[in-house]
Length: 134
Length: 378
Image (cartoon, rainbow over all chains, first blue to last red; front, side):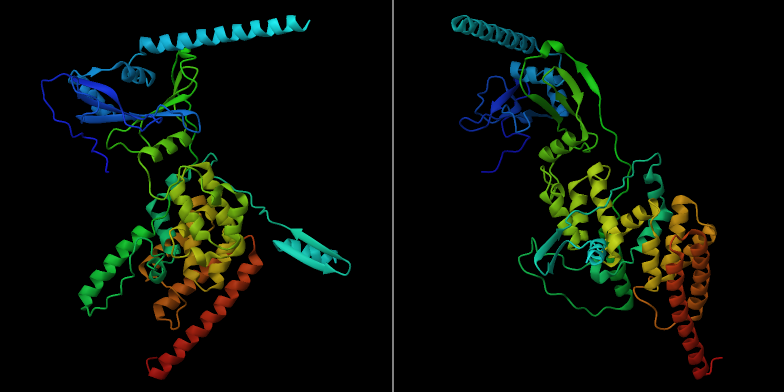
């Protein structure tokens, strides 16, 4: 099956609310996302108006996650007043196109806290083992 | 025995087995000892290389033979070989066809650009320590807006420590290849370039054109690795005097410029004089003067080169000389004599080669005189 064109095949209504969101395209256990603009009230499985980029959430062999953004079309749809979903605005924030999304900071902070807790737990375990040995 | 060994070792023999009464001696000398040289000094070669005068000289020195330029390379993508068409043409039509062929040859023989090695990109756009711990892998962002050249595309990375920076050349190249692939270019470096043994094997087999063609596709001309590979190949060609394998290809111009830039055209000059193309020797001297401005009587060579451009290209030695040929060639001989005295580092060999050419030339001009006499034109 050939891929649909990036211009999208979905029907377009000028006055309907648009949304820029991630649309899952990969298969089972292998997520891959298109960043697409579509009508807000449309399902993700329905055809989109236009594809604006892609996002591969699985790191490659060099431990990199690849994101492609068509900045020109993105600006166009933002100018048209399209709503941007949170995962997309997080990506755009990381890319420096938007200000960093609060949820990104939240995740970072929670991850750091988790790591600290894990470290503390490990240290406590180590200490326990040492006391048991003596 | 040791003398013999020394002699053989100097000749770069790869593997050698000598049977000496009780023992077998195996010497393996696989590694080439060529030191690559780069275009990375103070001076930028690009402005010199792109001047029309230098381009013309290089193109003329390539000595394009159309039977080699338009030869069938492989039958990839062809279901069946086409049978050639033979046509009867009038003179005008023939000239038109030749002009078309010349245009096609110009495209095929376009010399790969010679550029200075690029500087690494180290531009930090923002630092945000609050993002530490967000993810364990880097994010690479590529702008895939339609109609932007690969060199100007925005490609940036968000490191795990929250730094947003522009990507360096190698990552830029990789991502450009991911999103806008160039046919023939691989994302991973081909083994023939990364594995030294394989690369040297190719050079030893004399597959210079293959190596250079592939290097042109795989790398950008301002990459250090491209310059390393081409530099080693050119030096290998120069050491083995296989100039003819690169003649009529687009790489001969680059090689000549490389040799001229690094002041090592003596072998090439010797080969040209020995094969009897004295006019090309003058062109080479003019090129050297254009690049380094160090040839005594260089301006004379340059004006002579302009004169040579008006004569038709020669693919082999002339059998019969006309009066104009004799005049031009004798001027060329004088010019080269001066060049040898002032600039050559292997004077005796050059002089010997020139002497050989002179004898041949003398013979041909006498032949012409005799013919004129026989025809009663004197």
